[in-house]
Length: 220
Image (tube, rainbow, N blue to C red; front, side, top):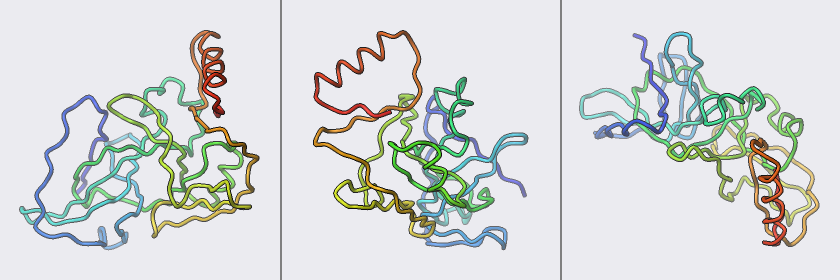
């Protein structure tokens, strides 16, 4: 049978969580696709729609005897608040959200390789770091607030104290590691913004003046 889901938009109430009878760490979907916890993949969408993108954070059997997984959702630019300008965003770039919900296991259709990359490098460099992967992400998206946010530091984030930095995916099973040269760095803290502007010149002027007064580097 064909199972489809709908990606949460933040405007509807959250789904009820399904009670688990037992958990498992891997599963074979439709006898052909092997998923493990932490893997990224496509989730079946409705007819004529692009498949959704998620990270598998839990797999379990419900009290009803059916198999389910908990998805942590990625969002394409067209699924976010900037959907009208999504053509300006690289189609390989997606945004990690904190939204998680339970779905039937058999709506997983294909594994993906998704790579976390630094925010402060150009698109060409990010594409090169992606290598043969499917998507990359460098920011998170807070769905309830329609807001973009810097990713928290992690083991896979560039360390400015090293001569080279290692960037890898957060999933042990989807590891993609790339060496990137160290960027010139001073002692000022860094604040990052999504590389898309709208509004009058006063907005950018105010941001630049505010960053200067706060003694921080504003990176887009």
